[in-house]
Image 1 (cartoon, one colour):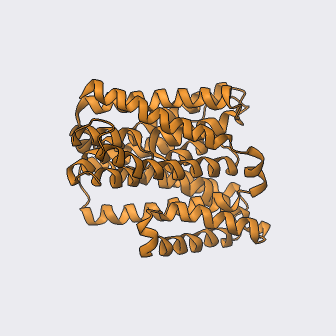
Image 2 (cartoon, helix red, strand yellow):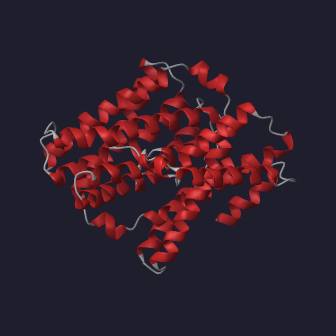
Image 3 (tube, one colour):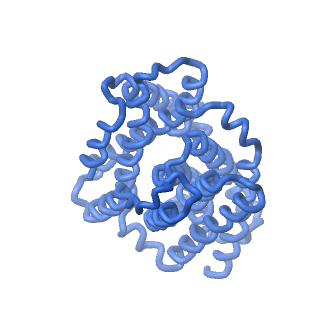
Length: 342
């Protein structure tokens, strides 16, 4: 399957590896910056730093046209490979630990947030279809990884993915600090276990969920991450449904109406199954996870390079209004679900 992804690179102007090398170098720099103590303190990942550096370089420096093939390869093909390897973070044994209640809550959160976000973005805020879906997917499922996976299915303009990732980073970080604070002052009325379910089902990024959960207790952090991983797993059916929708709808760039099967989503599931067998020692799984972060960072760098500030400026503040609405939607709806179920 990975060979299938790589073989399509010949369709790009890939005569020079300079573009791909450029994204790799910036990704390494992003990783070095992310390991600085003060950067760790504010929980900025290499993926986020990568897209920021990519945007700066893409808008300030002149990138040779001959590099475009390598940059596009990183933005499209490496991204899909990275999503496949993202499955090494999940096992079905971990998911089974939290029971069916968390699965039901996560399923409702993902489906209702996607529908609600699409309605608010498209109908009320008058955002375009793609941007509404990207922002909603980032909030509903697993942050930047979900944005990138959905972007790969819808094949949107790079600046839209950049905007969506920006909202995920901003409001996911806000919820990471806000939700534990509200729990500590008794605003939610949760016990620690209830809060772990709430955090896993409502906060955007996996790392943000871990930070929020461990702010309460180590056990709460572990449960919250498992609940979050169920949301990550739900990315697969969402990708297939969006693929079917985009092939039958005239609103996206897939005007040819040909059904595009997101094979990387199948690969994602196969990797989860393999990881659940515990064949590889933990050391090698950790190495694969580190490689996956590098691939994701390279993809984000490439998307950042292809993003132009004038296009972001033209969209205005509406994407952030949608992200704010989704933050309060997640907090309120998941609060009700947890209170009702636990």
